[in-house]
Image (cartoon, rainbow, N blue to C red):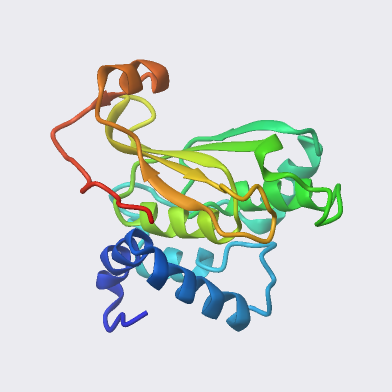
Amino acid sequence: MGITESYKAPETILKILYDRERREKVFSEFLKLYKHDVSYDWFHEYFEDEHADRKKKKQDFTPDSVSNVIARLTGGKKGMVYEVAAGTGGMTIRKWWSECLQETPFRYIPSEHFYMCEELSDRAIPFLLFNLMIRGMNAAVAHCNTLSRKCKGIFFIDNKKDDLLSFSNLNLMPYSKQVEDYFNVKFNDFRYPPIKEG
């Protein structure tokens, strides 16, 4: 991806996600690299080692074993999944995977599943978006403080083809009062640049 220093990863990944042609090429390369195994969060250890602020923000990751148990406990029902402090998306991915296993690839319909993630970390957001989009998920990602509801932006991720084997698109929700009210957030002064999807 052209990342030479780990501190550059979040910004570089976000730039890649904003460019449809480039991101789909990177997504295809990642799928080959991981032998198309999308059942887990590939960034878990890397992010925890390189980007998590464990001292100041007490950032830590839910172990895979706990994510697996929670995915099983919540069953394979279709509908909406809500995760606060989503990090890079490990728990959401495990839940999504458990739902995928309930059906065949030809019967799984992405539009019957929706994931709402909230995350405070500027560093985690690009990894979270990457993880959801490469898996063809439908989701909303609020870059916000779950307690104060102060928000930097909300991304809407949609699988327009409604096909499990397709990548999702990236959209930025408008910075409007209607969006604030709907998601129960208050936008701060930060603004993501607009996204131009082709």
